[in-house]
Length: 342
Image (cartoon, rainbow, N blue to C red; front, side, top):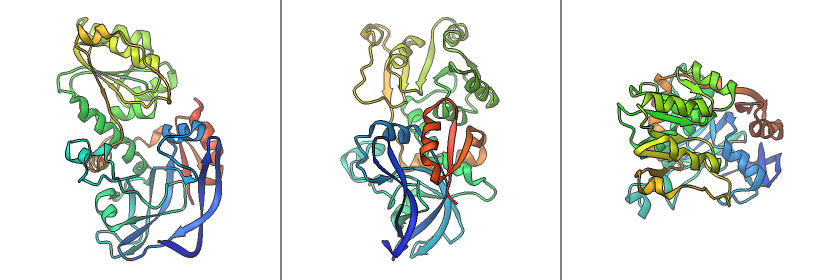
């Protein structure tokens, strides 16, 4: 419920190119609710796309931001949490009852529940049910910034579940941005071979630090063929939203291989593909979008025991500099931008 005359700072999206830090009504925890104080929120590609050109699922004015971690501020009739607990929360939870939930794609739920507002703000409110299924208490000792990676890693796990990579299969990740390299976190123990195709040397270097081989695109193609006796990759994960890359990615897969178009595309684009690759070579093209509650919980467990992705964060700015943060995230001058909400 809204606070009684209380205000908070929030970055409000009013339309393409218009995001401003304003005073907004601060929620407070009513019966069966929990209030979270945001500590840090990271900027993702969806935030940038929305800021640049709008988004079909976003109606302004609205507070953006969905990758975050914070501290429980108020608890009213919600069990399992106490003020001061470090947490992260999903941007939505599925209903579990609609047609899509019942048919195995809860990430596409038609009746999702949401927190009171986005995470580019000082506070957000969740219900008791949302807290039960969509809020994760961060383990003792985990850096608060690490909690911001639970949501994007959950998206990665959803895509990997879709293509069902087998232990002995060779995988190629096309794109060494934050989402591409989060696949390395998820696949850190994969025994079948893995490489990253990325044109920018700085991003290839970060992939190397995570223990993966990374090559510029033409060399990556050569390496894939050499390592698979000329067959091509068993699985190709396209972690960029470029139509030409998506189309050419089919040529990296072996006969009967699987290609995952993981990255989102701008509205109105078309992908040119040779249909004979699908017909004669039986290439399978998969898509993935978002995550379900189970992926969110699994992602938190992976981050507790796996490589720490916080080196992905190259810039930290206060919430008041949201415009600069979005500009940085849209450029190649930053890898991952965090907004510190103190």
